Image 1 (cartoon, rainbow, N blue to C red):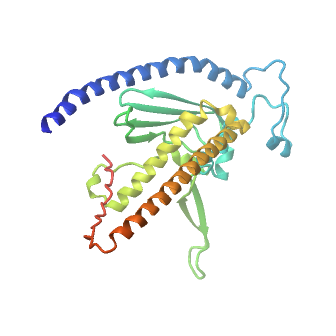
Image 2: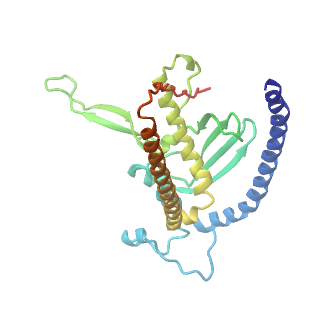
Image 3: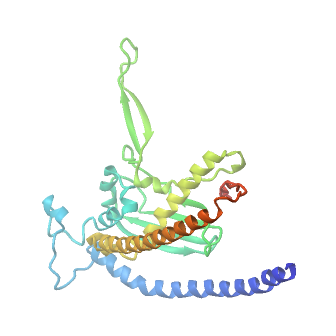
Length: 311
């Protein structure tokens, strides 16, 4: 048995790994090829959304949101395009707070690209000149241990250069001084608050992570996974299908997929119920036959789930 196992591990598995490596290389080349084909389309989308070019023969229809607010139907491009697209997605709408929306109205484009050293990908958010921060581009990079079997090593975001009093990731609390206090001025305190722009300050693994207890490690792990989920959603769903998210068609498509998945789950549950009924009948018959026999007690051992390391 040892010889057979050695043959499988050394010969067959190594051959499998060679083929798999070739698959990953060819897949990356294929993705790069089609990414170049997409880029001219994204460039045209940018020009139309930002009013760089006019689309001849297409009547502009104001969105229901703009109509309700009495928006300017003569506005160039597609106002609030990226804000609306992001908010329509279930994952991202949870991240966008009301205070973020005036800032995201200045978002002109989102792009992504692969990075090779280290492996991973980078998101770029392009902003028009705005009264909130100085940066024209905000970036978020994900560094992977292995891109083909994605294990996140760390994420790095741009440090946002907020203008005074415009930082939407912070809120200022004012507290009246106590009666009789010499200081009559209100006491101000700055606190961090929920904001989409916290995305650019991702959770980090401390340099000496051996001192982290299991509970803190699990919490950090969850934060990093959630952060990666946001980034991959923007890369895989929002950027390629931004128009469908803006119009709401992408939501309908996802709802339809969820319904199909639900139907399949229901069918599986029905099959499981039928199998359980058959097993119950068989067990009843076995119990009748063996009720006079003494059976040895069985012992169930509960296995402790492994905690994924942060390295």
